[in-house]
Image 1 (tube, protein in one colour):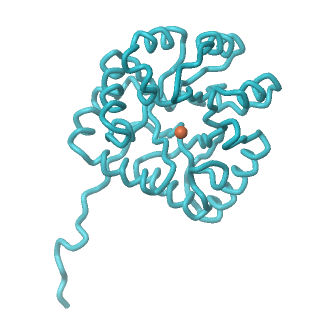
Image 2: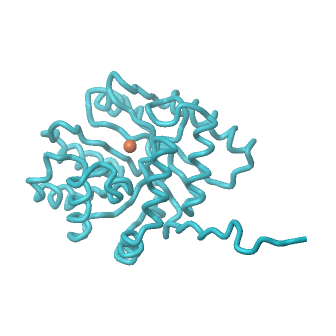
Image 3: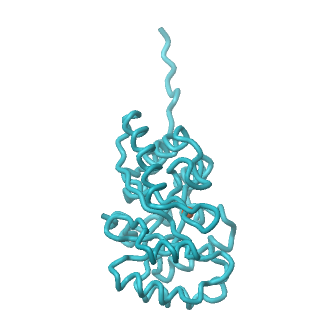
Length: 247
Ligand SMILES: [Fe+2]
């Protein structure tokens, strides 16, 4: 019989240098991320292709649009966990939320009904319209209660583009900064990408997240990880990124 040499000879996908994705919307049916268990499973497989073996599910909690509670998040988690077990995927799952700082957050926080990550890390999202006046006080208050606040994708808030000293102030309060791989890949435009690089140059990036909402996002990230740009950037990030500290 003939053998066809060289067939299916594909380059191995580039793996991330850390094991924990701490920002994604893979929990099914609780926000505008994954809309089905099947998609969630495919997205988790994509995470594994990228070298991720621990995922912290951080579905949105936002006033009016996605008013998630400890109960709704627990339900989504149990659904996904059962499917992952059935599929036999070897991936560790945890859950928390990406909390938008708004009136619904105020309510949950005052009632003690927030779900932090392991180690009391907490992913917080600023408004995209304007900076919250009391953000410094909130970060201070969270820290005093033993929480470890993480600001989700600081590079995406356009009101900081001309006021970058605010980044230094927030970071000096102990807030960890998480940049999106999608921003580095240019998915959110040149401004967010440029800002992400500025943060990197100023040693203000502590964590990276996929912020994966869909299989399309997974493809964009995979493509980016196999680019020359990522190969150049990765050595500058290793040793600085502390995703795996979330325990
Ligand atoms: Fe997100």
